[in-house]
Image (cartoon, rainbow, N blue to C red; front, side, top):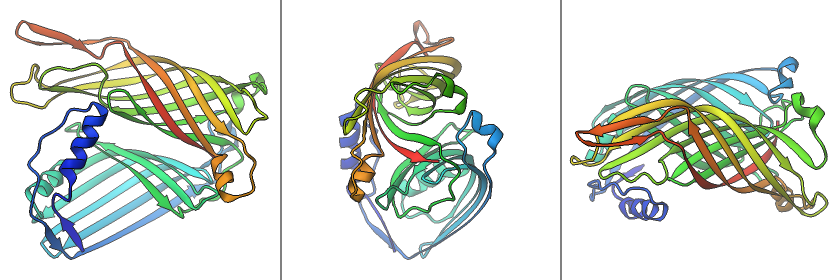
Length: 355
């Protein structure tokens, strides 16, 4: 059974947007509720390969695989959906990350005008990526996944909690920290940290060396143009040394610095008919530097809760990015620039996983 309607969504969305500084988007919500019987099926097939020793000099020693996914949905109201996808998956024993493609078909009679708008928004090809954690000592896990339409630049994303997630065969003994982050400008991100064998020679008990893979999407801090919203996508690869303070305490303080290079894309979206600027977009290489503090736990407890807590990593810091070129935008005599040097504070929550 599926229930379609407002269900308090307008109030929740406005509260979330207001508390994060994100522009409120006023949309007509459907007040009437509709009830439909629903049938949904999903099939997936994972083909994996054993870890490659030669590549573990740089990347975590994990299992690689390809996963084929097919989904279908039908309702008594005459709505039909289908989706097929193919992902490249990197699997550890307590986590995974993936990138791939989807094609979504949304046909038939939609339950409401809002559902029809969403169906039109989400139909077609998508480039998708995501990461998952778990199972932890407690039978829980989580995931972050998102996608972008290569034609319209539309985006989708979700964060979720899983119970008793499936466990893959162990890919090795490496430990990878997988974290989600929230940053100024209503930006959400996912981050992977690991210490490859290539930097093992400069490791010390008090100094840890990490490679960092970082992806973020959302808004841009401190850019408030009338009727416009500047959105961003950024992917980085970098190096992050960190100190290991108080290693014998039940918690560890880990001050860190990070330097990364990658690609940053920004898009000027139009939210009102009388917006200051027309829609525009630009992409550039980018260098980012940052610093902050991460906190880990080392209780070495015997209970399931304490063993789960020992996997937790919390962090807070400041990042500043330097695009290789900015972009000028104009409307008659009015002009400004975006894709410029900027920065912001953020916080992360991660889990140290076995790969």
